Image (cartoon, rainbow, N blue to C red; front, side, top):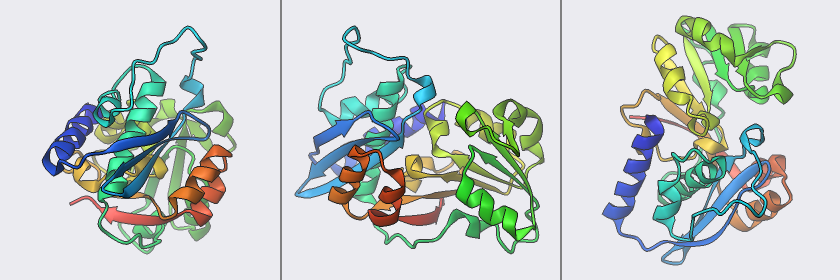
Length: 256
């Protein structure tokens, strides 16, 4: 599974770099969970969307066998427990944010397909409303939006059960980073193998491009946290829109 491979690559990266990380804070929260780490006086914040539809509740009966050791968090990313998986991916994203060595360019993922004559059919794995609006407005594409969450199944959105039939016909696929959390990324990439572009999108896709080399993803379109204190405040108030407007900056990068 891809998530298992990413876990091993992230752990190998920690071993190779030998930076001593401390986990300063973490939370399983709405709409994004997060992990805050620090090494050598430098902080980094990683986030992952909380899939509320998979949360079953824990209360006092559940003991989360997870401590404040970064490797332990990362090792839980392929757990069957949604809390552990989410915090594990947020931890990998925090490490990735720490090592990102480029300036976020502010480019939108939609720019990858605009003005391309060889892209006609586009699929969205997850209802990414802002990008969908941009591409529909252009009038140049046949767009198929697939969604699993009932709250996002609106007019013009298909159930994800139709992905199996339609994905092989797509020229480009925008894939929500949450596919890493619900173990559907392998399936999506297999069915979309004819697509020229396979773009992993969203804050949950903050992982280093190197972690995805050779796994089928062509680009990552995510966000770099530029103001950690402000981002934490917005996360604590469950304000995702302000998180993106004021505390982070978009980037789109090729996986080489």
